[in-house]
Image 1 (cartoon, helix red, strand yellow):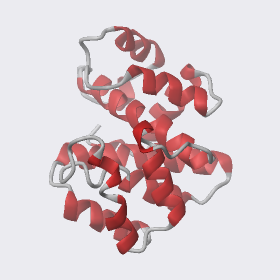
Image 2 (tube, rainbow, N blue to C red; image 1 turned 180 degrees about the horizontal axis):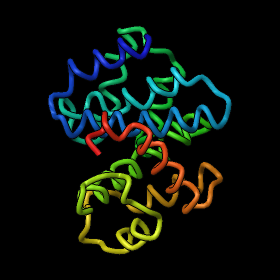
Image 3 (cartoon, rainbow, N blue to C red; image 1 turned 90 degrees about the vertical axis):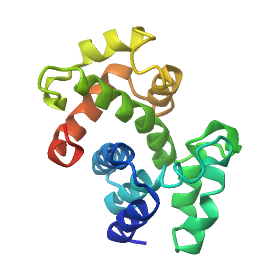
Image 4 (cartoon, helix red, strand yellow; image 1 turned 90 degrees about the horizontal axis):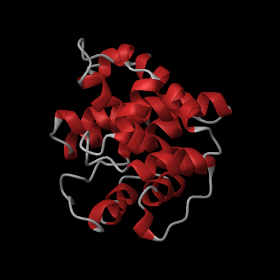
Length: 183
């Protein structure tokens, strides 16, 4: 599957504009990390795009992403990408081993949190988001309460990164695609 077919799959299964933008934000972060690590940018893009493609049809855990995986297999998504998507949920029993798997986990919740941080800025743009404000919002349990703070912290740790470094990197990746993210 190439990136265009992955996006078509997202559009087929995901009606929510917000969820589509989340998947694009995760894709932006994943592509930036693939570039940093000298890995296959399209493969990492597809992984970021497809990681939540089944959320609307399987909104209950543990159905997501477990029941979505056979759909991706049917559509020719590689074992490596499907494994990464399964590994982004702790309850699937698929351990995160590869750099791509760890990056998907590390970028998922953070991308959502950074989007929430941008939405409360006066201009509602990612350009106004900085590490200091993100750290402050992470401590506010009422802010973006659905975002799992432990996953953000553990994601950076699993990637072997300092949390501030990871936040900065993802902000920059999302800034580069701010228009398509609506940020």
